[in-house]
Image: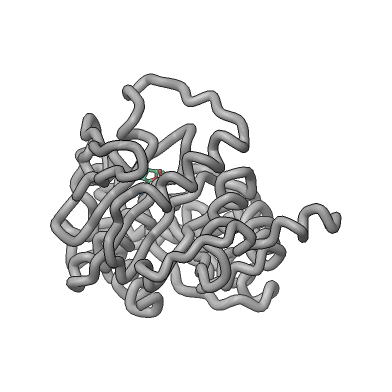
Length: 265
Ligand code: ADP
């Protein structure tokens, strides 16, 4: 890695975020592995525990958080230097590029523009005092995760979401290397879509295999946070804009979410 890269290590923007106690960046190597679903449900679970939470969606090209939380069409208000975020509930504030664009708009921005938007999201949005900020990053190791790592600085934690099959795990290894290179502390790896238990016969089928995320975590010397099974209700509730974890309490998938979130807290 070139010394140029190392010269943009995190924390170089000189920002202070003393009002945000814990900053958690959710990353993945590929799209479609359930990263936004995990980030949204993590934020809700923390808010349900009474914490003050901010959920920041920095996926500029495919912001999913407004849809998952049923906040499509919401707009944010404020003047320059002071943007009021949308609230999902009293103690869960949400910010997404999706609040500034129409549903079918394509955002065509280069890296510096994205960097400025992320900076504004952090500096100008009135987050007030937060116990946790959860950040949903786009897949891969591009401009957005690099910008957020630079701006937020040391102490920011990362969670890497993968599915179990090799094609996903091999990409998520790059996300782990990215975290190490920009000195983000890795809280651990979550293996999502890990097996499916048939609600009719109770038989388990490993649709995308199982265990790949855990093996990768062991190989790379980072913690493994757990496996979340497939539940078609996750899709149903996400599409309807009612987060799964608020609606379903007794499924294997809900229990897996709970166990992982307990480890994070
Ligand atoms: P990403 O942010 O990684 O692109 P999403 O969170 O948008 O992925 O999830 C992709 C799709 O997979 C969505 O339709 C979501 O509802 C679904 N999904 C995520 N996790 C699960 C799960 N454990 N079981 C069933 N469907 C899931």
